[in-house]
Amino acid sequence: MQTKLIASDGHQLEAYVAHPRGKPIAGVVIAQEMYGITDYLKDVCSFFASHGFLTVAPALYDRKAPGLVFDYDKASHDLAQIIYKNWNFDEALMDLDAAKAHVAEAGKVGIVGYCWGGTLAWLGATRKDYAAAVAYYGSMMPDYATEEPRCPTIAVIGLEDTTLPPHRIEHFRRAQPSIEVVLYPGAKHGFDNPMRFERYHQQASRAGRGKTLSFLIQHLTKGPGDA
Image (tube, rainbow, N blue to C red):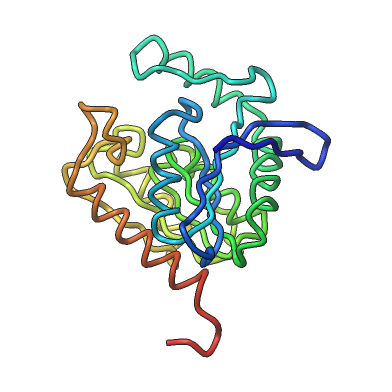
């Protein structure tokens, strides 16, 4: 379902919310791909909701172009790359904060991001107050590798991701030796997205989602004395 959020600077934006069937076990904020709040992102929200998480994906592009969603074609890809790389990341994090507040009633809140959102999930972990963070193939993460995370964090990357070549991954790992970097052989950038037929990698997607769920359950639903 759609809802309205208000950021701390008064900006109003749309968000997609997916509710679990019963009482939420925790909250999850989904940071979008550079393509916007696509049907894929909505399916991602539904996936986490089906496992008990109150899940929200804020429309980050609403600050300049309300409702902007790109197609998965080359022209749209090239334009989206220009737009997100020149975006004000502080404003994006502010909008993600508004989403976090929306699901805070569910308990602890984690952030999961894909593509551009992977970088934002990393910055959310280092600059904001989340209980856990999962960054899927955030190509700009190595540019912020020296920032220290404030919460448990993992990075999920495909070994065939040309936006994160081995030397970039190694740079990040050396700067953050305590962060688990999960690498999937044969997987390209965007491997979790079945709507990108040439990139989708079913095995890596399933493994990544399983890893993410276990990580979120561990850090969002268990108290200090729990096993």
